[in-house]
Image (cartoon, rainbow, N blue to C red; front, side, top):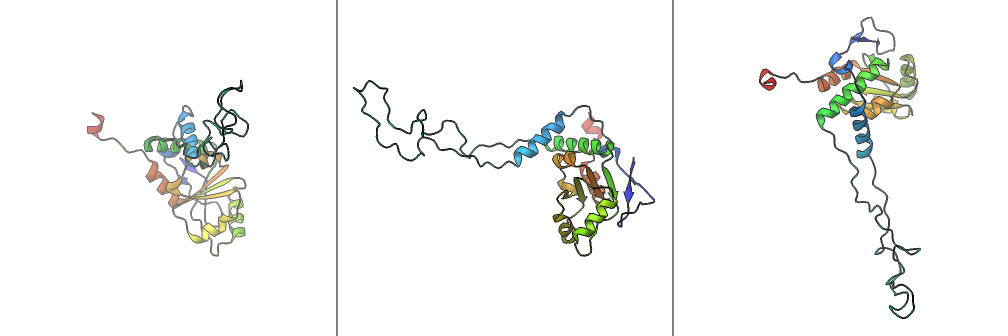
Length: 219
């Protein structure tokens, strides 16, 4: 399984990179697992900032509004009762809620293989032999990505982040830089183009390639 491959200068390479069918050629029968991984990523990155005040936290209400008996009205002990205007909130967020979702490592890797396979089938993948920037210039990186055809939302995958590449991509609003072993379903599915270096490709395949079962495990 071959895919378009370019040199470090952005010219077409003579030899196309070969992709592992176990990682980039998986049959996706349904999107249920992809949905779970996508939602888990969003849930685990959610900031729990919403907090409301209960009746015990609202200021005031220390004095009983009226005496217990003899007025003909319902008895109340505080004007900060939740059914009163200006009172506390019942069952509101306290800031202690846990919105995270768990997904097993095996399922997460299967979802990643499915996402990469869909991206490959849609022609989003581009392999570059090496991604380097001498001075960390943004214009230089933008020009290279344009040569590769990555002009919209682009996910750049490298084997390891180096300062020069981080500087060159930091100010490109439509570019996300990620290390090979930190790939996630959210970034893959939302990217219009995925640029992977040759070294990162090896790391991704070594990380996501299914482990062959032994004879004992089959029994």
